[in-house]
Length: 405
Image (cartoon, rainbow, N blue to C red; front, side):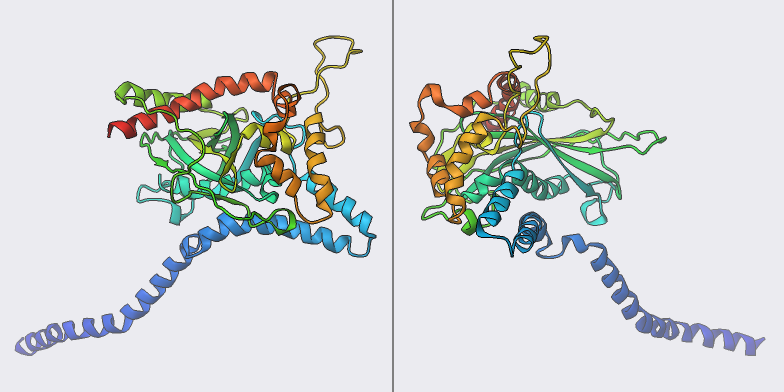
């Protein structure tokens, strides 16, 4: 028995050294593979990935299409190349679209790097994914404005979180123009998930809210346009802008802040027409600038081809007949006026005439000849006014909170 006891004691005394040896040999390999795995899982948050997704990816996609056009027209006569280029540039514009019904959708995925310890999309990831999506929407809304050397400062972003987006879920970011005034363009963004066929919808409320506020700033100096234009820019400037007027702040209280969130919720229902569930609503305030000069949103939108429906033909059998929509083959008169400012300079590789118009030439147009007002009148103007009251309430409530605290 004494011999067995000695063996047990020897084994126990050797156990710590044995475990230490195993850990020293195995731990480095374990931590190495753990670190590599963790690094790969979070590849979407690597350094410079955000910059690529926001700035370069949307631009490269458009540039790639442009270079394919150049290659396909390489051996054509100069006039034919110019015509093909002009048609391609016009095809980028939302000609005939109603700005209050124009929707840009971007697919997204709730990856591990965007989710928190509760296994759902982190509230901080909503602005992150919105940056890239909003830039894509801007390129769809005003491609010619960017070619003319314009940029879009981000004034503020407001969020209302309604339902959680679970980890690994696929969702869509749907952006649309809600309204505009003489300076600000208000873009409403809905984060939605489309349920799979035959499956119910799991609803998890997430009442937390967040807000980010920014001011705008322009740049001085000569502004390249056309083929020499800088990369389109949609960002948060570092210092306040000297142009434009700010909305006076109002006193903030609990009812005004509550009104803000309710007005955000009024912008869209909790469910989309296609059955998609709305998880979050965001309102972004942006403006159009050429250098340090603010351009009214109505001028830019009409110049890009946005328009109300054409009036019904006089020979229509019924006054209730829906008129045909404007299109590239049947452009609105406002788009033709805009093209008259651009086409003379396309062959020269710049848009200086159009740029001059945006920088203040529109002010010289007489009251009865302002084609952008007619293009966005009628039912478009009615919806703009209704939506403007809602989105301006969001801004007023937030500025009231800023004044109070």
